[in-house]
Each structure stands twice: as C-alpha cells, then as structure tokens.
Image: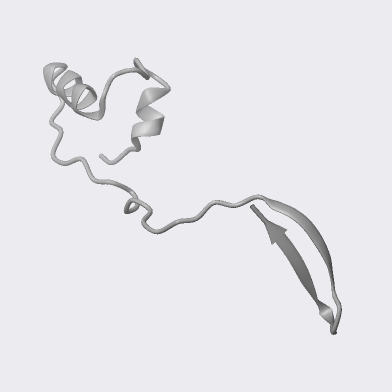
Length: 68
C-alpha cells in the first residue's frame, strides 16, 4: 500500500522524523519497504517579491515589473 507522509501525519505525532515514523510502523507490525521523496529538492530557486507593475513604454502587451 502506498500513502503519503503528510496523510500519515494527520493521524500520528507530526513532530516525529520520517525515520521515526517508519520505525513506529515497523514496531506496529507493518513493513516499510521504502521511503521515497515525491519530488526532488529544489536547486537554484530564487524567490522574489513583485513590488510594482507598470505598462511597458514601447509595447502595449508587455509590463515592466520591479522585484526585490
């Protein structure tokens, strides 16, 4: 059976680590075959806040944004 860690955490201690959850399931008689991430970790991601948006001076369909 496959289920997400987030779903499992709605039923048990949300403070426990992933390894602790797997150990608890094993001690309860359930076999944990594998723990796999749903998506790879983000690399080279930049988070910015859009401060202003204004029309482009030379194009009707474009906007100029200021980000921080």
